[in-house]
Image (cartoon, rainbow, N blue to C red; front, top):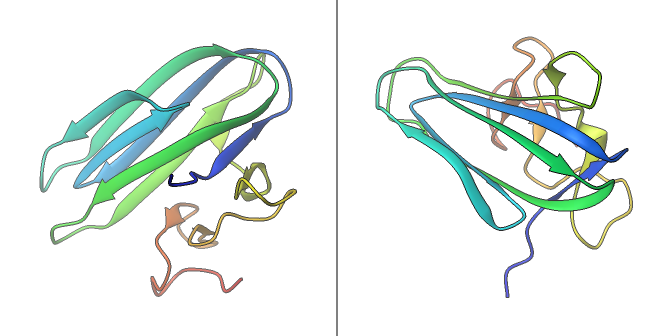
Length: 124
């Protein structure tokens, strides 16, 4: 069984998630594919609104990069709040308490979630 990273939701309510990437993206929440957009050499967006309980929920972001521009951003709007980047402190491994998910870095310059090893990734 593969353990997936988790997102820790601070309260019950309706959450809005937005994933944008170039060249393609998929978003999974609690084992369900909630959206995908797979158009090479174009900006792709997936948006999902879900009513969820506070606590940990499995999350999976899949993306591919063919060539050219590089971008991936993962945003959310908590209940009653504005859309913002998902803060790294709410992403964690299933067996960790409040630690960052390995392989996820928040780039300071681009304010995007980038893959490990990307030149703009912050070192953990």
